[in-house]
Structure formats: structure tokens, C-alpha cells
Length: 307
Image (cartoon, rainbow, N blue to C red; front, side):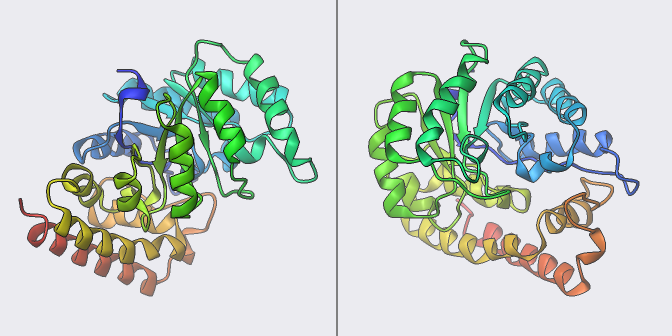
């Protein structure tokens, strides 16, 4: 199915590692199945949660290829971390060759520190000329190494180009999201919120779904909200409130805390090892916070979310 018709839940995939630091493909295969069993519409591989800035290009390509071979839903990928456009084109074309159904461009790679803001569109257009014109494209306002939000004029150009289908919005600003949705109305470019707090309002305003880190903890609650926000609006308000409280944990020690959850509670991963942060930094108090959040989330699911 074309990704422009895949509204819903697109978890940002983490990369499991062995304690020695290699990609753990056995755990990754279980993780793919876990995402799908819990309601993933598609999978966003090779993104910041995947620790792409700490993976070699070869590892990024192998990661995307593995996910695509084992997934039963569409797979999109970023995977470009370089500064020069020619290097980014090489990275992105390799992600496409590895099987990505769409290439999701990281906005901060298209307007680097010290470059004029007006350089964004010319650099974007130059990069697009180096990619297969038949490849669906998208945007990701990745916060690392810095966040660069797309402007409304830039968004309008992208929507009118007909090349873009997916936008992972990280502005965390409902007023701006409404303006963006107005710009995107009637186009093939759809907005997926990454911010839990504004999720329900985004869906009400016409957003296409969710693509945030918290689905690495409790996808079931996001699936319930996605499926029931229109038919059970009062319950949806309460579920949204709980999700907002739970989402504070992403500021704690992510992605190690998500890997700990998937290892110790879900039994999916063999290790909580990461490259971006040392696993030892996940203190016992942090672990207890993850466990207590899970108890609360399961209570909400078993009581409030019983249809």
C-alpha cells in the first residue's frame, strides 16, 4: 500500500545492540514483530531513535534492509547524517536501495549552522535532483544535532511539488500545527505528530497519526486512542491526559529507558545497550520509574480502555 494511504501509527524504531556494541538482529526481528502485533501502520527505521548518528553507513543500510525483509507493513527511513549534499544523496540512495518505501529527509541537514535560512529550498531542490524522481519523500524535524522547523512557505512548496507524502512534526505547538494542516489540506503530504501532548488535538484538526518515541513503551494505548478518539471522545480525553503524563519519561534517559522496558518488561530485547548513552547511566531509580509507569499504563488499558 502506498504510504500516503497509511494514516495511523508509525513507531520510530530503536536499534538493539549486543553488550559488545554490535547490532542485535535476533532482538530486532522480535522488535519488528512486537511493533506490528501492537498496531503499527508502518515502521520508521534509520531515524534518531535508531541512533543513526552513531551507526556507520554500512550499518544503516543493513539495518533498513533487515527491517524491510522482515516487516509486513511499509518501511520508511532517513539515514542521512552528512553535511554535504552529495554525501547525503549517497546515503539516501543507499537507503532506497536497501528497501525503504520512502525517504524521510532530516530538515537540519538541509540548512546547516551558519547558512542563511533562505538556503533551505535551494539545497532541498538540489538534493531532490540527485534522488530517484519516483521515490516518495517526507520530512523529519529531527532535534539532533539541532532542531530546524520547516517554515509554512517551505511546507507549501513541498506540498505543491507532489513529491512529499510524510511529515514527522516536532514543533510541539498546536497553533503552528493548525497552520500547517491548513497549508497541507487537500495535498498528498500528511502530518504525523511526534508530540504526545498535542496528539488528540492534532487528530481532531485533521492530522494523519502519530510517530513518536513513546510507542516504544506502550503502543497499545496509542492504538486505542487512534481507533477510538472519535467514537469515545470523553474517554479519549482521559487517555490523552494519562499519555501526556507518561510521556515525561522520554526526557529521563531515552533511548536506554525504552530498551530497558522492551527487555525487562516486554521480553523483546536481550540487552538495553546503546551507543548514544551508556547503559550504566540508567539508575535503579530510573528503572523503577519505568516499571511504575508500566503498571499505571496497564491499569489504564485494562480499565479505561475496555470497549
